Image 1: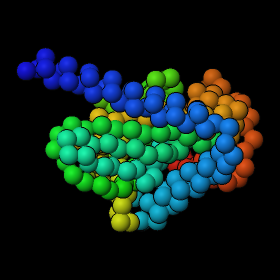
Image 2: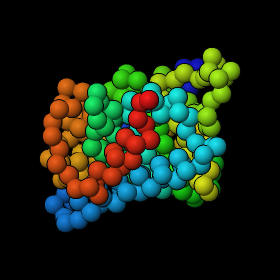
Image 3: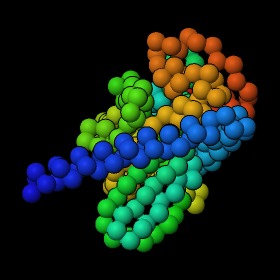
Amino acid sequence: MQNELFITSRILTSLIVLLLCFDIASVKAQSKTPGRLAEAEQQSKRASDLLEKIMAQTDHRIPKELLNKAEAVAVFTDVKKVGLLFEGLSFGHGAISRRFSDHWSAPSFFILRGLSIGPQIEAKSINIVMLFMNDTAADWLLEKRGVVFERAKAPVSGPVGEIRTEQKEVMPVANLFSYTFNDDRLLGRDLKNMLKNFGIKADNDLNKSVYGLSAYDLLSASNSSKIVQVTTEVNIFSQTVARFFARN
């Protein structure tokens, strides 16, 4: 039984990788179409607006302790989750910024894909926030094949609201915390349980169209000194992250 579950898990992981690669391949065919800059600006603004709404919830937002420690922030807006009788698909786009010694990186654009097996008929949209809490987790974003969130990489439901002094000793510790934000409410959510098998991969066609650089260039510590000239509209997400995730 355990052997069968392992094989099933490996098959689903491979399918997620294929879904991520297929999406990038389909986008590359459109790489020379106009409007890529506008697309990047829209993604960055949607991600920025979502963070603004989350942090406006004074008693029900991301705890300050996590804001101080997060090394990378990912926001995926309007992620579609569609049930098709015997399988479910999740798909969406988002922006990611990484903390360096004296600045946050320009937004790097990613795609999200998920696949679940089993009877299901549903269609809904969700907003997702992921906090990569250390360099080990942030370095997952540099993997060329993308990141499939399974086993040690599975995100943990994030705490919500300010953590009181007496709670700090039992504050959860994880490489990656995850949240959803819908109906003006932030919830710590176990995305592995919610989306089942899912992963993200850099949309390097969009990144290179905007910056002339890949996600690796934008998010790698060894390349953090590279100067990236972008419009204020593209950089709005990183500016918002820098404002809320400043270290005290």
